[in-house]
Image 1 (cartoon, rainbow, N blue to C red):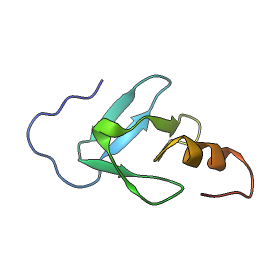
Image 2 (image 1 turned 90 degrees about the vertical axis):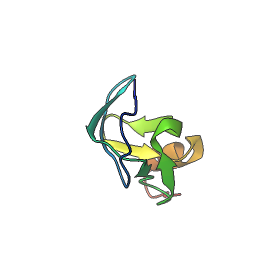
Image 3 (image 1 turned 135 degrees about the horizontal axis):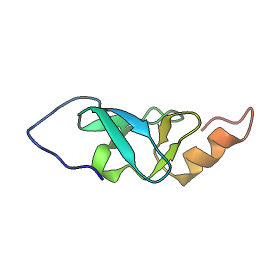
Image 4 (image 1 turned 45 degrees about the vertical axis):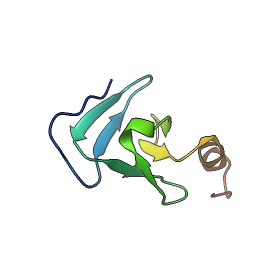
Length: 71
């Protein structure tokens, strides 16, 4: 999945796949599309392949799927 080589810092750019991630630009974190919270890349567990965006937790991911309800 993800391995770290070197010491990149800042926000990562990722491509969200069905069961994995592709690193486009290495970094330490991504930003939740719903809450705006920083998510350490190694702790990232929730994302949308269709929308290509990460979520802090299951509640944020679920709220994104309900029209008109954002975290």
